[in-house]
Amino acid sequence: MSMIAEDTLMCDREWGDTEFESKILRNLLGCYPTGVAIVTTRTADGRDVGLTINSFASLSLDPPLVLWSLVNHSPNLAVFRDCTHFTINILGHGHQELAMRFANPRIENKFADVATHLTPEGVPALHGAIATLVCENHKQDTIGDHLLMVGHVRRIGSEAGKPLVFHGGSFTALHEAP
Image 1 (tube, rainbow, N blue to C red):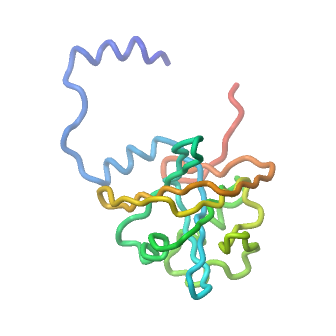
Image 2 (cartoon, one colour; image 1 turned 90 degrees about the vertical axis):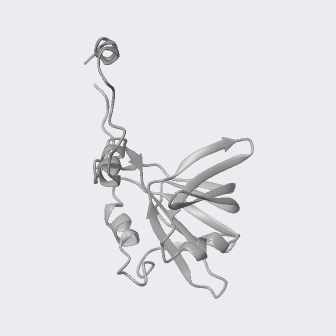
């Protein structure tokens, strides 16, 4: 399908809706596939905290910065806002169950029976993640209904594997282009 020819037709008609509900916007944003990660940290009293995110992105290579966001009503908001470090654990295509576990607020101990190791910075990292970034909590800003978290990448690790992908409200995997 050629987008160029169709795009020229847009000039002859009114373009796009200017009034829409959040659910419609959320569904539209679901057209954009994202990777899936679990962000983890440890509280001052030694409790491990983690949650599934797909709002992760690279921000800068020099200095090495990444960003992710957390909804303002999250019960874990204060933990991540106040932590000194966190890890971004990028999940592989076989980690759908793990992603669902860390996304479920009804599971109290998300780390039960999950293989982790403690980084030198004192935060848990998940065994089997295809990439792990240990980040210093660099900066935050409340934007809209989310807290935008910027992490300064201090340590990295990776394993071979294809990423878990979230698209259209479902988990999927990458496929080779023809």
